[in-house]
Image (cartoon, rainbow, N blue to C red; front, top):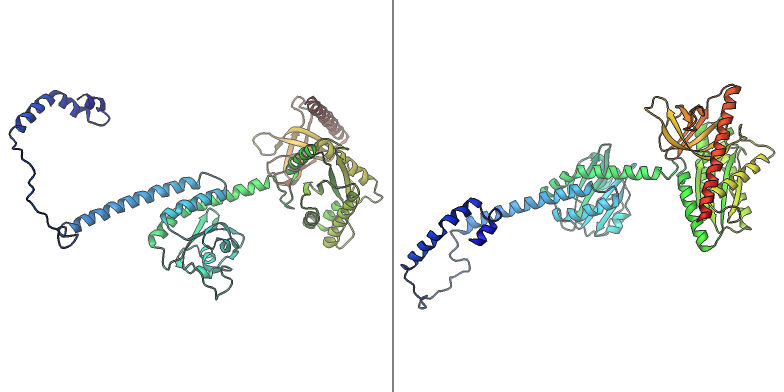
Amino acid sequence: MTRLEEESGRSFDPKVVAVLEKRYLDLERLVEKRSGQVAWSKLPTEVKVERGKAPAAGFEKTGAKESHEANFLLSIAAARQEAQTLFELSQDLGASLSLGETLSVFSVKLKRLVPYDAIAIYVRRGDELLPEHVSGDNFRLFASLRIPLGQGLSGWVAQNKKPIINGNPSVEPGYLNDPTKFSTLRSALAVPLEGLDGVVGVLTLYHAERDAFTSDHLRILLAVSSKMALSVENALKYQQAESSATTDYLTDLPNARSLFLQLDRELARCKRDKTSLTLMVCDMDGFKQINDRFGHLEGNRVLRLFSHALKETCREYDYVARMGGDEFVVIAPGLTPDAAPKKTEHLRELARQAGKDVCNEDILSLSIGRCVYPEDGLDAEELLAEADRRMYIEKQGQPNRKNRRLYPRLKGRLTIEFKPENSEGPVLGNLTNISLGGCYVETSILLPADTKVKLLFSIDDNKLQAEGMVVRNDPGSGVAIKFKEGNREERAHLQSILEYVDRTSKAFDNYYLSKIQMR
C-alpha cells in the first residue's frame, strides 16, 4: 500500500487507492480463506503433444480476423507517421531563408514518405528551369540541365501547372543527350510549385522502377507543394534583396557599400603582409553630353558596356566597383609602379571605345586619380580622398573638358535628416558629397525621380535646411538630389551649409585619426 500511495495521482487513480486503503485488509483475509480450498497438484507428465500437419494448423478460424485487425492498426500507424512527417516538413520549410539549406533538409525528410532514387528541385529563372538542388542517381547530369519552359517532363509541368505521375525521365532536355543511351531511371513524379507570383519551380522525383509512384505519393507532394513554393519564393526574394544591398542594379558591379568593406579588408591584409595596394578613382568626361544628346537610355548602355569591359580586362583578384553616377573605383593589390601607367591608359581606351560603340563618336574620355598604400594614405578614407583629389586635378587640367561640373563638389561624411513629400516623418541618411547644385545621400529608402525632399543638415540649427528634388535613385545605395534653384540670398544660404559640412567632416576626420593613433 505504501507503493500505491506514492504513485497515487500519477500512475493510479486516487479514488481507487482510497478504496483499497479501506478494504485491502479484508481482501487479504478473503484470499487466504479461499486459497485453502484449492486442491494443489503437480503438473502431469503423461500428456503427449503432437505436431500438427502444418505450422498454421489450428488458426484457420481466427486468422482472417486477426489479419484484418493487424492491417487496421498498421494503417493507423502509417497515417500517424505521415502526419508527423508532414508537420516536420512544414516547420522546416519556414525555418530558414537559405534556399540551399531549406531544400537539402526537405529532400532528406521527404524520402521517408515518398521513396525515390533521385530528386531535382528546379527553380524558374526567366523562361528556363535551373536545378537548385539535386541529389541521388545521376545527380551530375541533372545538375547541368537547363530546361526551357514547355519542354521535357519538368518543363511541361511548369508551363501547364499540372502534375505528372510515372512519366519518362529520358525526355528531360539534355539529360541523356543521346537517344541511344540507356537510362537507369524509369519513372518520374513531378509537381509544379506555385507561389503568389505564379510558378516558381518544379519538384521532380525519379525512380529506377517503372510505375514506382502511386496516387498516395502524388497526394503527399501536393500537400506540401504550396508551402514549399512560398518558402522558395521568400528565399529568392531574400537573395535578391541581399544582392541589391551590395550590388549596383545597372552594371551588376559592387556598389559603394561593398567597396568600403572590400577596401578595409584589403588594407588589413596589406598591413599584415606588408604589401602595397593601388587605388584608382575614374570619372567619365563627356558622359553628361551623351545623356543630353542621345538620352539617358544610351547613357545607361555606355555605363553597362564600360563596366563589363572593365571587369573583363582587370585581373581576377582586382576589385571593380561603381561609386555612383559615372564614377568607378579599381582596387589593384600589388600593382607595380611600372605597370600602373599602362593600366590607366588601358582604362582610358576602354571608356573611349564604349563611347564609340554606342554613340559612333569619339565623345568619351576618362579622368583617373591614382594613389598607393601606404605612401598616400593609411586607411580607406584617406586613400579615396587623395585619389579623388588627383582625379579632379587631372580633369581640371584637360584642355577640352567635355563634362565640366557647374559647381565644385565637396566630399563629406555627415548624418542628416531628410523628409520626402507626403511622408509621415523624416528619415536618416549619410551625406557623402555636396555642391551648390545638389548632394548625394546614402540611404536604403527607394525614392522615385522628381520626388521633392526637405533636408536638415544640423539638428542643433534648424536654419541649415534646403529643399530639393530626387534626380537619380540607386537602389540599395542612395539618391542624388538637386537643390531648388533660388536667388542670391538662397545661394548664400547654401554656401553656409557647405561650410558647415566641411567643418563637421574635418572635425570627424580629426577625431577618427586621433582614435587610430591612440591604438
